[in-house]
Image (tube, rainbow, N blue to C red; front, side):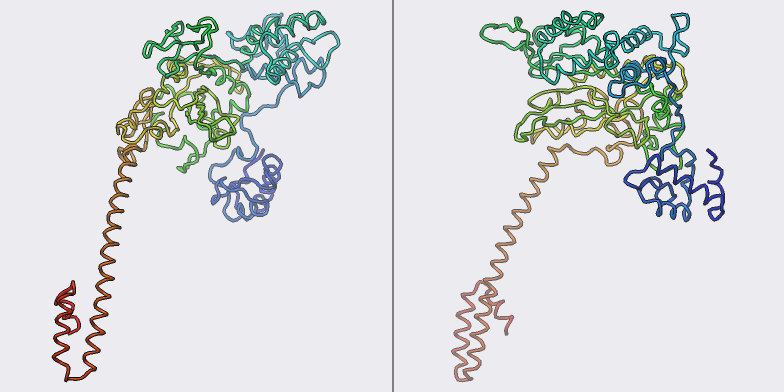
Length: 552
């Protein structure tokens, strides 16, 4: 699209004609309730306005400097039109409700293109070597009809639908296995090649990227039975059994029901899937290739922390596809009854490579850990972070082989955790706790302390301690506030006492003044009596002679 008109004089006919084309394009591709983000120099894509106001702003102020790629108005710089697959050609229009082809491409991190085999062994475009065979098998299953002449279900879509029904109906694994046996007896041709048990179906889900890992944990949050501790039966710290005990099972090893379970959703495959689409893969480079670099803060890439990190790690920042992550964690009550004390802690990752209108959207959040627990894990959350830390270290040191759909090439994807966002664990500390915990909490033990000018884990940059100094912990702040409130209460009591004394003195002075006036009116004959009476009253007054001097 010709955009030379953007450099023309704003009063010229070329600019006005080009402006109308831009508005037509923007309202066709990015309109929300009849409004778009205004790209003028004043609004800077930060305010939604109507077409009339947008036209007026762009005529008066002009476009913000450097806005040549209309990313905020529906233009994808790295996009490419999807090509029809061989499945589309042979079967016509694909059913949008059960897009198994798209699901497989999404899971494997490979774009939807023409994957017709050459000589029965290779594909036209470059594919990840390690994942290639899995991809071939899943593509074959997504193309196979459930039975001869069935256009509604493929073998893969039918199995996924059965698993969906199992979740909705809360069927046990045994009942699901019995259902598969019944379907195999009734429809042997249709069930040929499908999983024979829930265990095999679960393995299929993991190949699609829908799997997860579960790790048992100590009920006192001392040990995670993972890695070298995976085979332990008792916690080495508190000696508590790994399993729930009962009268019929005093050791717990018969039923093997764990006290606590950590849900871990692997990160590497999900990062690979970010590059399966040419559009999203292009957006993952936006921070380096599409960002407006005019000194204004619009994105974490504009921050000194990001830039200092790039300076200290040039080998990482050399490839703009390497992922910068943020980590957030907080507790919430999953039950509707908010009076319950149950607290579940999710650990969520956000890819900051994406543009600001994408990186904080819910579809781009990646749930990494789920810590179910009636109570907050407290400072022992580092026990549950072990699987995630291991993944992050591997992604930082080695990386993972990934296919980039926008460039149609393989590359070694690396990732770094730049920020952690949480109010943990200082808010959970009781009054009187050690002040150093706020600066040496669980995240600090894992990712490093939050020292002046240093971002946790990797890189440098502005931090709260750098801007405001060593901030005291919340318990210290609460103690200071309570002491100040006590001092204020004492001062208020003292002020009230003094105020009452002043009121009493004012009352006595009024009585004294009235008596003096009465004696003066009675005449000079009673002067001695006045002096005698006044002297007696003054001697009884708390203010003494000073009260008389005021009216003398």
